[in-house]
Length: 292
Image (cartoon, rainbow, N blue to C red; front, side, top):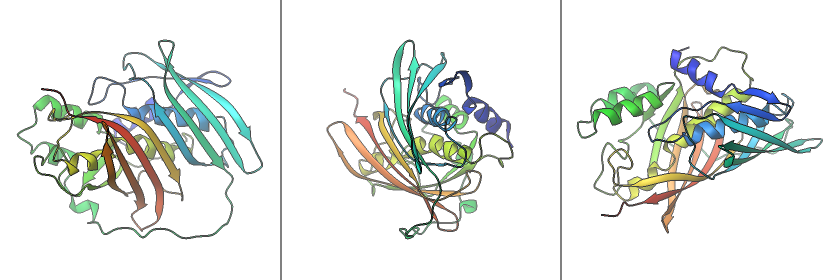
């Protein structure tokens, strides 16, 4: 396990300060606010620690309300909405400086047999043949060195590999609003931290990194890294269909069906390397062109 991955696990391992109250630390991301995936992942940890281990998470729905302050801890309060025979529901509010910054509802289910079908996995190259984030980012002369370092630091715990050029790597000409990324943790997970919740939490963390890329591709925009778009996550939803491991390759197949009114929608499916549909993700975000 890499040191960066150990640090990420420490970040997600919340301190319990009361029966339904947890506290998490923060760190900055590529922009001067708390990374949305961190808040979502920590909130899911808080919810999951009030649920029996034999009820894995099957969905979450969340709203980003205010930018998080990376210099202050975040307090997560869990409301135990319902404990049914098959399903458990939790609501989590994340608070900083006395104000809510994030709201999450999550549902957990006891495993049961049922009908089975799934959308087929799209074609994609072997992730081992693709350049790493470091190899790709180090090759971009148009990005400022401090931007490259921020990206690499933010993704150091995750081995994330784009199938094609990311928005900030090749911009100016519109492309199909579709993006593929392979990802896994930077090292094998061998710890007692909340298995199997840990894998779901880490996928939640990564899911906020690239989902709005396809919006930028449709308009030939490079995003924050080149300063031609200002954006932020507004809401986020995930459905966990089948078991998976976050330390094994996962294909994040993303597309954008719409952008309008200063907002853009991203939707995606996450597959295991052997073709199992593991997760569906949908997110809407603010996507604004800076005024001259």
